[in-house]
Length: 85
Image 1: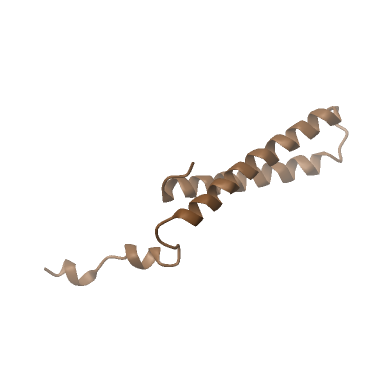
Image 2: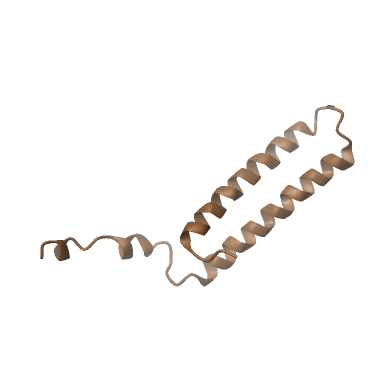
């Protein structure tokens, strides 16, 4: 379960890695490298399953976060007037 923005960013990076791994595996499927088709299918299913899990966690976090991403940068900006005091 994602509990904060730092975990969200780590999860987003994990999604990218899973997508790259899946694309690589699918490209290799055309080759005959001695890997049994059932093993190849199990690898593919495993990556897809993990990808679905982390994507679902991201959707849940997006739905439940207290502020929207669009508002967050402005809320985190430094108030320059308070620095003058």
